[in-house]
Image (cartoon, rainbow, N blue to C red; front, side, top):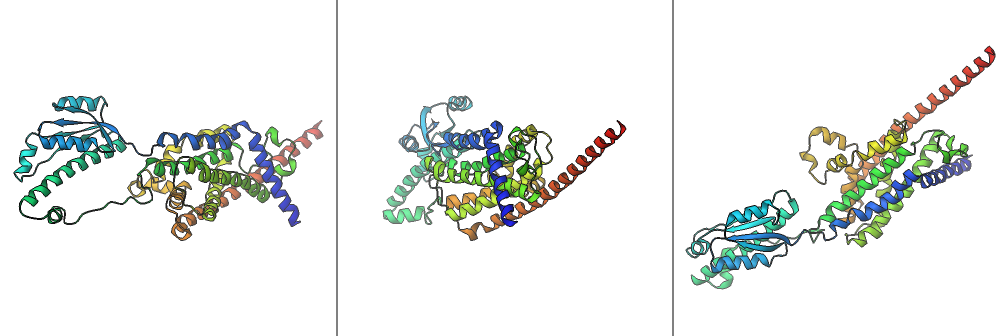
Length: 408
């Protein structure tokens, strides 16, 4: 009896996999969609860092020091000095036209003030509409101005009778060294693409489960026409057999991301294979169970596509990687708590980018397990209700048919 049930379970799994492999709508999502987005989304960020942004300098001082600042700014990796203006209005117009993304204003009398030992400042103006470019241009200008200012200050201290090492220590008594961990290049792709790939897997999986009808009994698809044994299987066999088909398929997709996409685009691959497998089982288990429950509310296949394809922007925002979760409205935090990607994204980033072990990501994995059990419970209860309701309707139709035959 047990072996027969196991055999039926795997038959349901194989039938489900064959079904969505033959269904054009589902195949477009779970095969071509996953592969296409895996290459399409990271490609624009292949350079990782938005370097060499066009910028300009407004030189009102026309001194040796201002020329030194211009040379220092031009040597920075983050920007490219495309113009040196003598009029700030020209720089403002270029910024408004997006010919440049920032400019530095060197005020008149800068060198004279510094040589007198007085404080002097430069103005840095950046285009706030481009967050990544804003930071890079501002950093380049700040570094250039500070390096020239530090050199001038050290020279003045040396002229007062101090040695070079003493002058440097006086000028900067506590030097700061900046180390960027786990993302040495500061690349946007390493941070954002890895997170979005998890959302792609989640949303395409939800769409697939929804379009295929979840755990529904006797689905009216052509592909299931001659599969009465698997379509009419007991609820638990039907539920877990179909779930297994989706989980196994998406585990392959997850390892495709890890071994192919991550290496093609140069993303860090520090994740332990066993931990990645455990993560995939828990993540996809939670997503499949969520899909199995929600799919039972849809009466038409197209509804699943419309619903799940319309929420990715909200899911990206609610997941907390683009904006801190603690700064979100309480209502959004509560909704996000029931979305698997909320816990999957930080777990995946920790595993792949940092090389975290089980203990370090256990809290997120436990949340995924609890979500999986929660949606499994809801899905089974709803499916059992649907099965019972279907049986009642079937018996009612049968009785009505008999009654009509008696009347005739």
